[in-house]
Image (tube, rainbow, N blue to C red; front, side, top):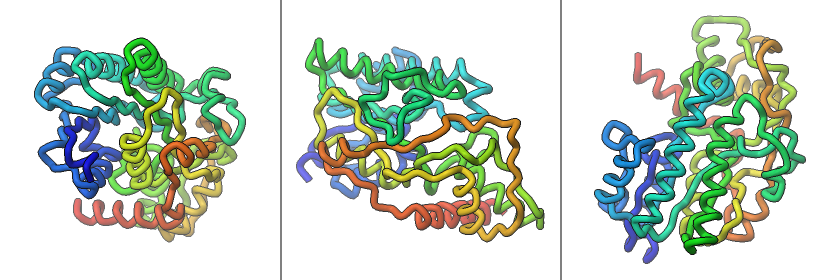
Length: 317
């Protein structure tokens, strides 16, 4: 309790998908609501150094947890690569620097699996992070987030600044984005299956060949991992946060069809890209350094996500 109830926190992105779960868990650990500052983009544009300085002055944090990101699936990464590079780079670089300059005690940078090389051997080990170029469709995003790791290590080396860097795998769960233009694969497939059911459609269309593989981490597990690292980890090396599982997109689509009750055909649009061929993390370092292991069964996590989205859809009717 002493760690969480005595400190002041800034959580960028704290009202978003991951951030809302993380703030809830912080409250459960004993952090008073008045000690958790969640900057909103309407008031603080974190690509602007003046807004960052004003935010830090307003919040007076001991710890900054940087979750805010411009992110999305393959389609939106291909359509807006310049925005994804600029916004993520400028937010991260300036926020870390200004946090150090303001005397913040700890900076928790949350990066992305998209920083890994396209052909990283499975399971992805943190030592492989620099052994190649990221998958092209999300390289601008992955590289912008990767610079936060470089910066955190440089500031630790020169200034002794306690900045850490975490590498979460693909996420899913309640409160995710279900907009088909920007969403990731799980919410997109859930929405397609449910809407096809509602229309009485006999098929849905999925991107790619279905042969690519992915690993998925339930959002509540990710939030717990970030908070364990915030409390317990003080080191220069990046740390993977994942579930240590791998599933093909084809098998994923069939599982989502089962969970949603969709019995129609899944048609694969092979004119669309698969993205990175395989993804699965080695999660040994997180377990050894701060005791993190994923807890949520994948199918159970999907059922919770589907139930949440159904509730939202009913609420809109």
